[in-house]
Length: 206
Length: 206
Image 1 (cartoon, rainbow over the protein chains, first blue to last red):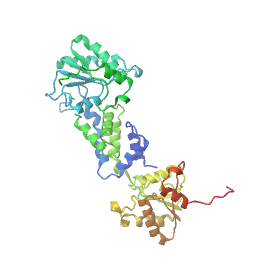
Image 2 (cartoon, each protein chain N blue to C red):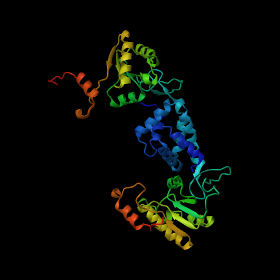
Image 3 (cartoon, chains in turn blue, cyan):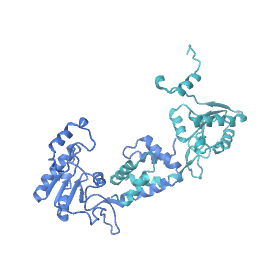
Image 4 (cartoon, rainbow over the protein chains, first blue to last red):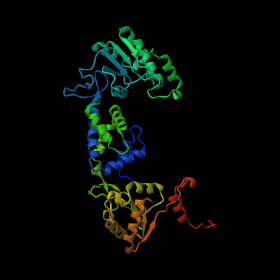
């Protein structure tokens, strides 16, 4: 019923995460009848996307290739960021979430994956050697393990703590507990257990 | 935080209908880390989309330009479709919905818009002359007005009935009532009113 060219576009859109056939068709029909040139503009940006955007060769964050062909991300290129702390995250989205919080001014290291025996991802698949190189070259004093507080994330943090122990840096783990605005009544048992075991002394003098 | 090229892609994705900033970012990050070449493939299809897909010059359905530069849709090109009936719809999506139902084998005419005084769309903005030309050239005997049973759709159907009256074709309007599987208890007043006023005689002999 639809022209073949539009069908191809719809099938490609349907490969994006969370996009079903109906949504893909909606995108396609919108682009065909749009008058702002969005289809052509988006198309030409996408053609070069994977060549232009690469993992940062220092930390694994996304970076644009510079004139000399190297990919250094905006955070690694920023001299004002403290080199004393290195925050280890599972994926780029987690790095972005921490940046949005505005509460961290150090450097990052993106693992790209977590330990996941069910998906066949074992210790040898984690970039531990690259992480150790990165710690040595930045001279970081504290390594913040910011993998998620999930089964895979905790296992990854434990493995990294064991591997990094011998090089003599301070290791820390992000806190896990009842989230801001969260309700104790509806918190799950593990979260409440962590909130209790991770409790901190309050100083009544403020 | 994101490389400039990726930011451009995210901003363009966010212009698609129903896509917010978070979803657009998800698409962009997925495409950057995808290994199947989806970004480049989708990109090159989108670049030529608006040139390759055009409204059918006969009915307004979407069509691919053929070798001689004309845009005739698959339905208009299909000799097996009956020319005796012409179904008038508001938009291409409605035509597609009717095709999916599999209960119509005639031709179509896509108005492209409905009367909508609030949006400044008046009678002079509807392609009535093109519709009359199309009726005459196909020799259609029945015109099925399949604009939606909404305020704008009903107004459009009434206007078309008035304009088409003088040319002496049979005019019909699609039925409106309680949908298949619908519950009378939860049907709105207008739908129930239409279901009653549109009631049909039942033949007890089947």
